[in-house]
Image (cartoon, rainbow, N blue to C red; front, top):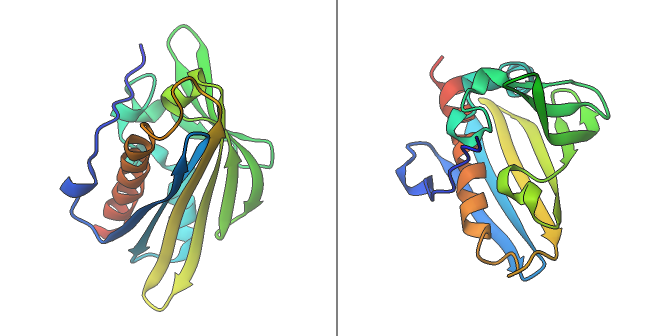
Length: 173
């Protein structure tokens, strides 16, 4: 069962997050989210890649259980999910990996997988005096029936929610 919920949640979240749909048209959109986290870049990176279940909202997964999400940390590795009956889904594939600094992925998340689209997700971690600045940028492009303008705000909300949850998880320590 597909449990992805596309609801604008950014107004409800209690964390400092800069969010923006930087461009949108019929054939593509870009969303960008930036937050400050009070943890060193390697701690952020390790949590992002090896402790996904601690910050990813399980409602935005196919299985409904964030503990089924995992990453194979290597170029060509995937951000994947285990499904019932030995099923699997690839959410994103790693195309660039600089541990502690940046990960670039190709892929279409959630309901975007059923459309004629692709995406490039970039997670960046930049050291600051008090921890890290973390950004999630997602560029989606393609030719789905009805265009992409209508889904951009929902994707923006989901990406922002995940970064906010990561920030909340790491800032609670």
